[in-house]
Image (cartoon, rainbow, N blue to C red):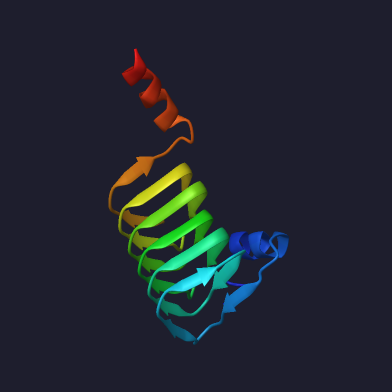
Length: 132
C-alpha cells in the first residue's frame, strides 16, 4: 500500500510506472512487462521486466523475478535475477537464490538463499584466459 514505505514511495515517484498490480489484486500466471512495474498485490507466477520491478510492502510474488533493477519491500518466494541493482528493504522478505550486479540488503530485511554477484565483463575475462 502506498505510504507505508517511504523509500519505495520515493523510488516510485522517480520511476514512470507503466504497470500496476494493486493492493488486493491477484494475478495468476507469468507477468511480462516491457518497462517498469509496481506490485502491491499478489503475483502467482514468474515476473519478467525489462525495466524496474518495485514490490510494495503488501506485495507478494510466488515465482521467479527477472528485471534490470529490483526493489523489494514485500515478500518473494522464488529466485531473483537483476542485471543492475537489487535492494531488499527493511520490510522485505526473500526466500530464494539471488543474482545481481549490485546488491543492498537493509537492516531487518530477511534473506534465505544463495547470492551470486555478477559482472557484465566476467564472461569476457574467462574467455580471454582460455585463449592463452
